[in-house]
Image 1 (cartoon, rainbow, N blue to C red):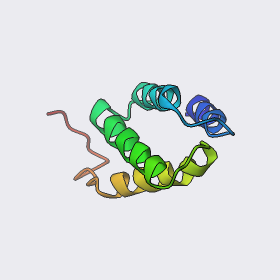
Image 2 (image 1 turned 45 degrees about the horizontal axis):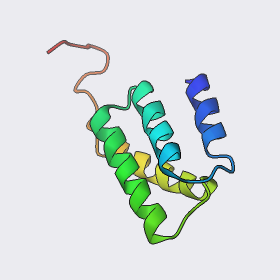
Image 3 (image 1 turned 135 degrees about the vertical axis):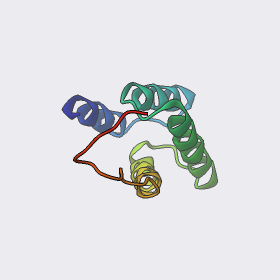
Image 4 (image 1 turned 120 degrees about the vertical axis):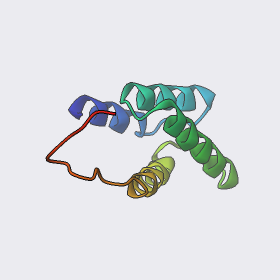
Length: 88
C-alpha cells in the first residue's frame, strides 16, 4: 500500500491533466486492485469534473478523487461476520 500511496502522491504533484495523465491514473487504480468498473467510474467522474471546472493541474483533482473514493467505499456493505470468512 505504501508504494501505491507514493505513486499516487507523485501523480498528483503539479502534473498537467491530459489524456496520458488519466490513462496513467486508471492503470494505477487497476493495478491497485480497485477493479476495472470502479476505475472506469472514477476516471469518468474526474474527467467530467476537470472539464466542468476547467481544471488543468492534477493537484486540483486530488480532492475530487478522495471524495469519489470515499463516497464509493461508503456504499459498500461490510461482511456479515468478518471473523468467520467464507467463500462463495
